[in-house]
Structures are given as structure tokens and as C-alpha cells.
Length: 192
Image 1 (cartoon, rainbow, N blue to C red):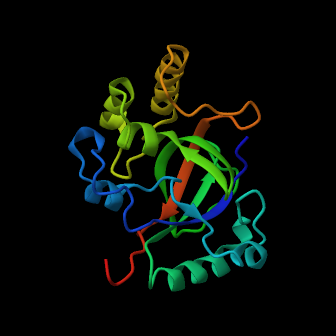
Image 2: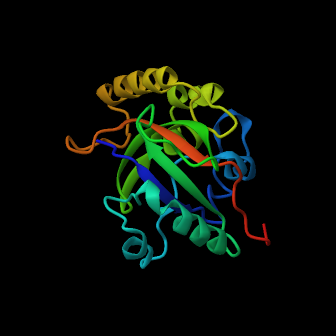
């Protein structure tokens, strides 16, 4: 389902909220500083879609120079990330500014419809069989291998079958393993 491309995500200042108990002893501040996955507000500037040719939530990789300039300007006032989301091994060459961050599990259907199981069910989750996977997350709070993400998916599916109150994907919007590449540095506004 996931195609691939560039995504700009605004990370709200209360992301995750201070009253959330994060898995593995993470504080919300630590989670906020480390997480590089796809949870956040995608393409927060409504005009960006037209300017960068965004389709189904992705800007094409050839728009990288313009998107990068846009993100640098945006980062003067808000915390944001420029990511490349795609399949396990992208078939295109990424700009040298990108580094592999890890694997997400969830779905990215569009800028208006995406869900991170890693963020919502591991980092900020409430079911121990899922929050225990925090031990498998790397420094970007993502899975280091696709196999780890697939193991999580198996555990998650078992819980869904047992009646756990978890987000359920639509048949045409499946949850899947998504490779995440991010800029080699997180962009923070001067006030953070």
C-alpha cells in the first residue's frame, strides 16, 4: 500500500502530552526528543501540497531541494521533521542529507490519514504485550529491523483477535512495515 516519497511532519510542542506515561520509563520529553516516525501533522501548510506536487501525502524525491529549504524556514518557529517513507529498501538513491532511522509499523494513506502503531501502541500504549516492544526500539524509537516490526505485528494481531481495543485498519488501508529515512539532524526552533 505504501508508496514512497517525502513527508514533512510538524511535531506539536505537547507531543506526547506531559500526562502520558510512556513505555520503558521514557518521559514524554525523552520520547519527544527521540521519536522520528510518522506520527505528527503531515504537511501543516495547506499550500505546500500544490507547491511541491504532493500526491497521497508524498512529495516526489526530485522536489527535495525546495522541500528542504521550506523545512529549514519552518523549523525557525516549530519542531518538524523531513522524512522519506517507503518500502524496506528504496529503489531510488536518496540525497546524502538522509540517514536510515528505522522501521515504523502502521499506515500512511495520505497527509490526512496515517497512523503509527509504534507511537500509539508501544511508546504511548496501554497493553503490556505491545509496550514491552519498547526494548526493541532504537534511538529513533523505531524498530531496527523489519523482522522486529513483523514480530510486533503478529503480537498485535493476536491481541486484536482476543478483543483488545486497538485501531483496526481498513482492508484497503492495511498496516505494514514502513522504512523511515530522516535528515541527519532533527530541526528544532530556537525556542526549544
